Image 1 (spheres, rainbow, N blue to C red):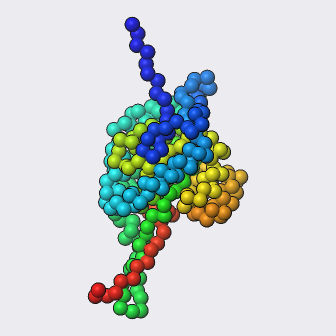
Image 2 (cartoon, helix red, strand yellow; image 1 turned 45 degrees about the vertical axis):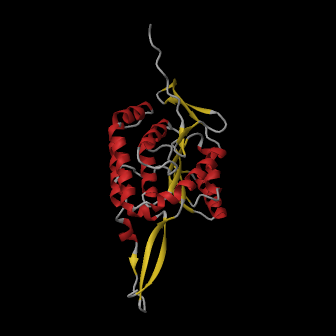
Image 3 (cartoon, one colour; image 1 turned 60 degrees about the vertical axis):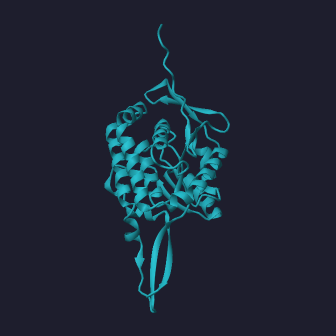
Length: 289
């Protein structure tokens, strides 16, 4: 008797658990080279799913921020190990969605995680400072996480590398993330969520959503609990929506136009990507105390 294969049910990763969309709806994903070949049905996430993800990220934030910088670096490095160990599966997943060079993209994503893992216990020395003051005091300025950050991945970018390149510098400083995956290639984010679940990253630090970008982008812009948004592949109309929403909800906004970033290039990474989502605390301490 021939055994029927078990078909995977794609689910999003929110709060350390795999969930279906709140409304139970799905978004079919087809092979770009064969529009009749169904690759899978990903959750069609709603505004309620986004709000739930923000709550999960907010709950995970204090614990993640209190971890030592060294420990956060270890966890990012562990995640790189997970991607490396399943690189063939990731490359096959990307190839299904017509990635130009899937093996190169997976290798670059692993290297990007290792790169930011290395910055974990160093960026504070680069971004912080000891300030000269007129008085018997030490004066230090230190970078700190800002809280929950929303990420909108670029639809036309490398779906794995682009998403990793946005998430890694945000979480390495102690922030938590609610990320919307590439609408064109959401299955890669589903697979990434499986790796996050078995890494040492605490549940809720990274939350992944799939669906239609147009449905969720306005809520990313206006949600009061999101302290910042990093949006890639932004069209003019989207930029207006994000800018107005960010001004109304008083959040930091970073936008990148479609095709503006070569995610494989060396300048797609750097300590400035970490600095974009930190805030600074100044401490006064008496000399000799």
